Image (cartoon, rainbow, N blue to C red; front, side):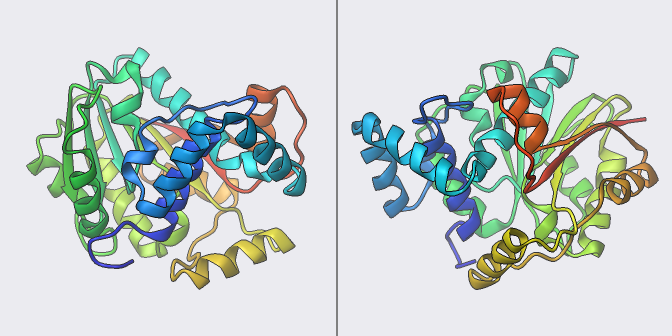
Length: 281
C-alpha cells in the first residue's frame, strides 16, 4: 500500500463492482465506483458507461474464459447487500464496515437512509476515500470515518470515540479482509466486536477456505505480487468455532454455488470465497 492511496485490491474490487453493473444480467449496481477509484480505473468505468453494448460483450467473454468466476465479486457484493438489508429491516440502525476500502454502501443503498455508518480502515486508504467523497452526499443518515490498524489498534476504543452505541443492534460488514490479516489480528478484531456488538447484532464476514486448487494457487501468487499476500484461511467449521468463542452464532455460510443459484438461477460448482452470517448471542 502506497501512502495516501488505496490498496491495489481495494481499487480492483471497486472498479469491478462498477463494471459489473454493465453486465447483461447485473446482480449489483454501483454508480459511485468511478468517483472512488484512481484515474486509470475511473477512465475504464466511464468508457464502460458510454459503450454498454461493448461492455456486455466483454462480460460474456470474461464469463466464458473464467468459467463464470468473473461474476464472483458482484455475487459477493449482492449477498452482503441483502444481508445488510435484512438486518436493517430487523431493526438495526448502525452499520460498521470493517476494512471499508472503497466500499460505497453508504452512498448507494436506499435502506440505509435512517442508519449511521462507521467506516473503519487503514488511515492511508481512508484519506483517499474521504477526499473522493467530500462532494458526494451519502444516502445514509451519517458517515463517520474511523482510522485503525487492525494488527495493533483496539477497534472497540476507536468506535466508542466515534459515537458508536454498543447497546444498540449493529450490522458489522467484514468483506474481503480476513484473508489478509494474521490470526492474531483476526482475534483482536473479534474481541473488539464481542464488546461492541449488542445481542442480536449481525456479522457478515467473508473468508478463504484452505484450498490447493490451481485457481487458489494462482490467486495467491497474484496477491503476493501486489504485496497483499493471503495470510489466513479457514474451513467452515473453523470459522464457526472462532466466531462461537466470541459469542457469535452462525446463521448461514454460503459461497458462489449458492449465490449463483439464488441470483442467476444457474449451477456453479466452484467457490472462491465464502460469506458467513452470524448473530451475536
